Image (cartoon, rainbow, N blue to C red; front, side, top):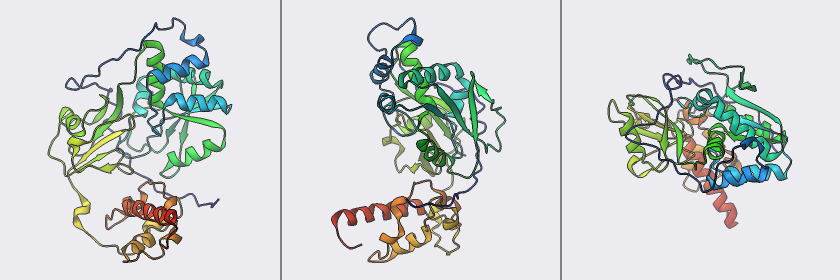
Length: 351
C-alpha cells in the first residue's frame, strides 16, 4: 500500500447563519409520517439486538455518509465484533452543516439512537466527531453531548476522509448522525425514514439554513420553497467541494444522501481560463497525485501516460479544483481519467 503525505487545504466554512438557526420543515414541503406495522415497544432500551436491526430494516434507514442501509451496517458490525461506534458529524465542507445542526438541536434523539446502535452490535465505546476549524461559527460546541464525548477533529480538508481511514483501522463503526436520529424515531415512534436533513445555502438563497425535507422532492422545488434572491447561475447538489453541478434542478430529486443544495450567482468556470502550470493542485492533493500531470495527459489525443498517473486513487475531495487559480474543473477531469484507466485495464488494452 502506498503511503501519502498528509496534505490538503484549510477551507473557509461559511456555516452561518444556517447552523445557528432552528432546523425547519417548510410549510410548502411538509414531511408526511409513515408508520410501520406493529406496536411500539414500551421499553426500547430492552430490545434484543436482532429486533433493533429489524426495525432499522423496516424503517428503510439509509446512512447519509455512505448511502448504505443502516441495518446492513449494524448486522455486519455485530458479526465482526466491532468494539465501538463513532458518530460522524464532521461536515468539513464549506456551507454544509446538515449533520452538525441535528446533533446540536436533537441531542436526546441522537443519544437514544446511538444507544440503540451500540446495543445492536454489542459494543459500549462511543464518541461524536465534529470538525475543529469552524472559523466563523457563533454556535458553542460542547465537550460532550448527553454524556458522549465530542472529539474535535483538526487538520486540513478532507478531514472526514482522514478520520474514516483511521477509524477503519481501529475496529470502529462510523455512522452518520442523521441515520441515528432516524433510528431513534423508528424505535421510539414507529416511523419510517421519509425525510432528510439538508443544508440550503449560497449567495442566491434568501433564507439559508438547515431544513428537514421530504425524500423525492426536486431540487428546484426546494429552492423555490426556501426562497431565492436572484436566479442562480450555478446550483450544486451536495457539498461545494464534492457535490455536482445541476444542469436542470427540476429533474434532480433529493435522497437520503443529499446533504446540501447550494445556489450561486457566479459561475467561474464560464471564464474559460487555461492551466498556467502553477502546481498548486499537486501541493493540495491529499493522495499525492499530480492533477496537473493528469490534466495535461488527458488533453493528449492518445491520452498517453494516464495509466502511470494513478488517477483511480482519487478520493473526489475537490481540493485541486478549489485551489486552481484558473478555476479549471480538475476534479471532473481526474474522474474521467480514472474511468478511462479502469476501462482500458479491464479490457486488457493499451492506455
